[in-house]
Image (cartoon, rainbow, N blue to C red; front, side, top):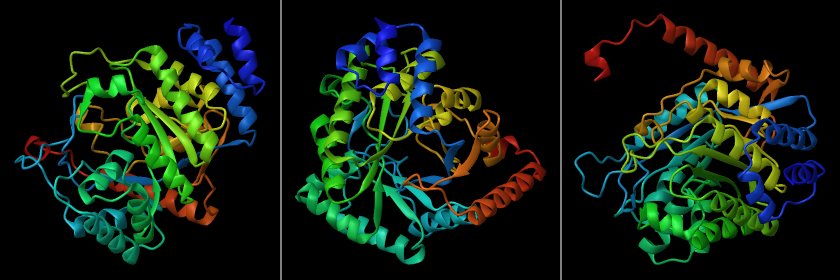
Amino acid sequence: MVARILDKAVAGERLTPDEGCELIRCHDLATIGRAADAVTRRLHPEPIRTYNIDRNVNYTNYCTAVCDFCAFYRRPKSPDGWVLPREELLNKIQETIDLGGDQILMQGGLHHEYRLDWYEELLHDIRNRFPQVNVHGFSPPELHHFTKLNQLPIRTVLEKLRAAGLGSIPGGGAEILVDRVRREITRGKVMTDDWLEVMRVWHELGGLSTATMMFGHAETLDERIEHLERLRQLQDETGGFTAFICWTFQPEHTAMSDLPPAGSYEYLKTQAIARLYLDNFPNIQSSWVTQGLKIGQLAMLFGANDMGSLMIEENVVAEAGTVHYLTLSQIRDAIAELDFTPRQRNVAYQLVDPAREQFAIEANLARDREASQRPPATLHEIV
């Protein structure tokens, strides 16, 4: 049965939800991985694999939602809450450009007070200072929150933000797109249909976005497939998703810390099945940020064709105790070790100009050399 399903997917035929559920219960990781790799090579026969350079800039950790899986957020008026000063945010973007990046991933909590004009002004400031930078910002939970706080329809919110400089939307806050799961792990946050509607309207406006899945917590195996099915249906309708990225729930320091973490086996199997199931998604991105270098590299043989971002800065997953960091050289070497040519790309998965790519390589090498020459931090500095 499983062999027939895999042959069907490799041949380019669409899997049914029942077939997806059959695969997710299969324990033959190697066979599923080979099938996913075959599909990837059919979709991407070129001898290259890609990565990008961006920075995760979090503008606030205040959040009105309560997510049991999140170690990053702080409740409104918490003494540990903060809003990133505007000039500091702009400096972070300049540092990203200096390292060859052309994008920032800008997300925050659901701030309890800021109205839409605050976000429009933020985007205007970024665009005026850095017109060449793509702002990949504001996940569907944030955007849906803006509609409630401003009493505006989602189309109006998106039109205003796009006019102000929003370039694309990240797929954050999806977790599992099944309301039963969402009700169990979060309160005060967008539900499935509204998450999808944000993306639908953005795509109708001509925008691009990514899609994600965080798994290994309250969902069943079948609900992982239901999540993929909802994404596939919307992609059939709009074609606006550029890529899919999945990762395992990181339980440390969260209200769900009693759950055992899903391991690399579960990650590789789920990603491979996503590659087989999401036949209308052009790209699958590895999640080395949560899995580390070697599993992140192995993911390139389990359905991924993109190594993801250099991720100059990452705060949300790091708060849960996951602290994998790679240099640009490590990312490029990981791709080259698989006999592919590493190439830098932009948000639309277009290859950047070779001269700009070489600039990024040299800038990052210089930064890495400088970092290696610094004295080790003292305990006082670490604290």
